[in-house]
Image (cartoon, rainbow over all chains, first blue to last red; front, side, top):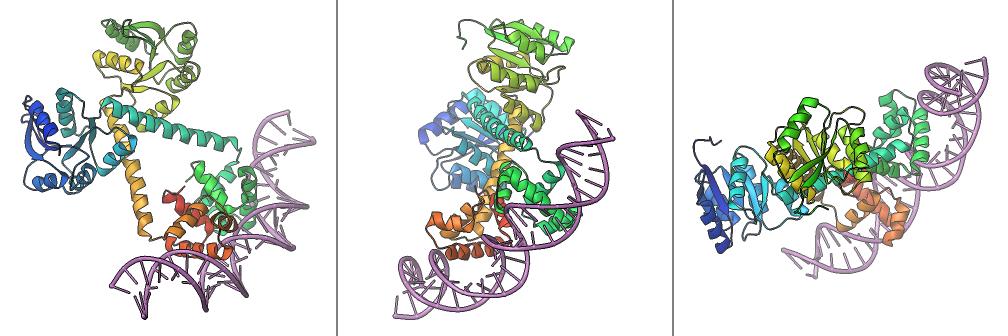
Length: 222
Length: 222
DNA sequence: TCGCGATTCCCCCGATCCGGGGGGTTGACG
DNA sequence: CGTCAACCCCCCGGATCGGGGGAATCGCGA
């Protein structure tokens, strides 16, 4: 963990020579970051990290020998204290999610001015999650869509008019448990559980247990 | 849609008088936003929007008569061109997701300086999704967790060593379709499908069709 | 007070499923 | 050229499922 009194020790992984030099030159104007490692590909970065003391990595995605996502995964596994910030031209949701899942702390687009990149590096070194505006917008859209779908599913589930007991039985049924096991766990007769499942099938408009499990999953149960 | 030549027309919904006045005073120093509507609760905001021309709303969450989330939902439904930016002390993921699902364009925490709030309002008026650093961090964490879980599920699915045909059958089975229907759709004999499902049950380590559907859902199929 | 829905329990029966078993053909890979 | 995995087909018996009845109790609101 760096403290505020010394510059953040930075590694840069970028295969394109011109972009790399341009980035290094622009970073050179800032005294609060110090580039201590430069790598033309992911493998070189991982090798270099074995000896260099690094706080933050600025990571390109498209690189030979070991791409940015795989390199991020390797760094996150072997040096969990190192914060990786992606710096790339790709702004699609899949790529962003992939990088974050691999363990990236932040995600910047390459058109950011140097001040923003430096601020992001400092933020990441303090445990923050710096993202470009456009990336934040993508994340917001993703969460919005997911959450709206979840709420809509819950609303449709409510609209089915299930009783409390039916909902309870459905929740267990949704996990793949058989009727007799449900009966045991709810202290009911097998006949009673079958009676409830019959009502459930009618209300869910399904005719097989498997379809009921599927429907329950679609409604967000389990 | 506002253009750059005129100030952004802003509405403020905040029930706490002192906070509201403080916010209005601080916003007053900026010429690129103009507060055209002030409401002490969600209902008053919605009523006011019927007559006022507003580009962006700064919305508190805890308010009487109509809370910020419900008000956001109402605004998003009736005036989809109006961008709502939450401005609140709540920073928990559930609250953030709820607000975004309701249609909020951005989400700011109340300790932001006035410059940041104004910049966020301008961003929102241009279709952006302004979020405080801490909120971005929460969104990143959420996406990271989800995506990592998804990838892990896919990895475990691969580890099962299903054949292409089995995977195909499982995908259909997971939707609740019966064996004979699977046979029809894949141009197979019922016996063949049953043969595949037997292998699937063994590899998935389940003993009922319902549990298989459940397992498939857990592995991210469907 | 009356009725209605929710909950619980029970019976029956045909269709389907589950888990064994058995084989045959093809194609890839050593 | 063998062999092994994948794919396909078949049989059967016991268990379960799905759908059809009916009935008693209880609580809550009309």
